[in-house]
Each structure stands twice: as structure tokens, then as C-alpha cells.
Image 1: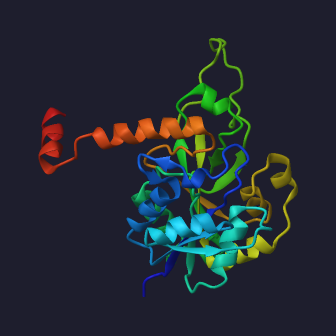
Image 2 (image 1 turned 180 degrees about the vertical axis):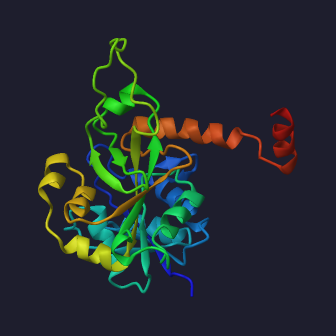
Length: 278
């Protein structure tokens, strides 16, 4: 029997730096609808719901043929908003997507879901409660940026820690590194991609837990799960994603989308030519 999966996309209106950003036009289509489009291309999903606090978002989403539901305006986070929707779902796995992340790769999302599928060869106490994505960090300013959340993992992909600080720390070497020194070598420096696949009961339990000390200190809710002793499986993203927090981010996203859509499609002939060149 296949695992039943639902996608919940929390989408609130009142973003402090860019109110209404999820309804901003990105190359002629609202940002939140581009996230819905990515979810609709997944092979593992049965239900897609946009969870919002604003009727304007409901109107746009339902007008495009997707499901949108009003949720409480008192929620502290998108995860709490997703948990409210999950209470009424029969899905075994709930995938939470941010409504301002228009460049999510559907195959990446499917892999995150599959990371939570029951594995008869894995001990029950080592099974992850949630799974997420991380992408390589390729620029020093990104590594130092507190708005870019960093993650370090064990060899088998279990999250060890998330931080806004540049982790892992690269201690000085002999001879000294040139200034400014380069970032640590890949794959140790990775940026967290804010996508979470949850076992449904884990999501409900997480939402009922109070914020943890490290969560409050760093401003990162995933630390609540680590402090509770939960396992978070981290999978590699096939490409970096970019959220939209400001109008400038929207303009940058339009340029990236234009560049992506201008690329020629990959055909069997293209693949054969690449192999012949190798």
C-alpha cells in the first residue's frame, strides 16, 4: 500500500518586509501559484492545500484550481499553520512548503517524502520524524550571511545542528589562509532549504511543544526537534533555491526564471552528444 502524502503550503499576507509577497507577480503568475505548480508536478502527492490567513490569497489560489483554506491568525509560524490543516487530513506524511520559494524542484520534493517512507531494513528507533533539504554554499558572503541557515550532518545525513552562524568553523591552518579566507570545502558548508516532510503525528506533536532554548536563541524552529532528540534526515538539493523576502528578491527571481526558461530542453540527442564529448 502506498504512503498517502499531502502538501501544505502556509501562505500569510503580512510579511514585514514585503506584505502580500505571495501574490506578487513573478513572470505573469503569482508566487504562491508557482509553488503550487511545483507541488502538482510531484509523483508522490495526493493532496495540495494552501493554508492562509487572508481571503485574498484564498481567492487567487482557488481561482487557479487549487485548494485553499483559512487558518487561525494566531499561529506563530507556518509549521503551526500546517499542523492545523494536518489535523483534518488522512495523509501519513505532510510536506510543508514555503509559499515564497518558487524554485523548488519537484523531484527533490519527492525524494524528501520518500525519506520518511517505511523501510523494513531500518530499526524503528532510527527512523526520522522529518526530512529536509540542503544545498552547497558556493560563496563566502553566503556562508557569513545570518539570513542563510547553515546545517551540518553526520555521514548518513542526519542533522547535527542548524545555525545562522557560519558552521562548521574552519580553524586557522599553517600556513595561514589568504584574507578573506575561502569557505570550508564542500560538502561540509551547506545551506538549509526550508522544506519539511513530516510524519503526520510528528508534525502534530511538534506543534504542541513549547519553543526550546536553542530555538529561541537562534530563531530556528527545527532546533526544537533536535533538542527533543528527534532525527532529521537531510537530503542534497539538486540546485539552490531562493526565497522572496523583498521586492529586490522578486526582480532577481524574474531574471533567474527568464534564464531558466531560455535554456534549450534536454533531449536524448543532447545526452548522446554530451556522452560522445566525454
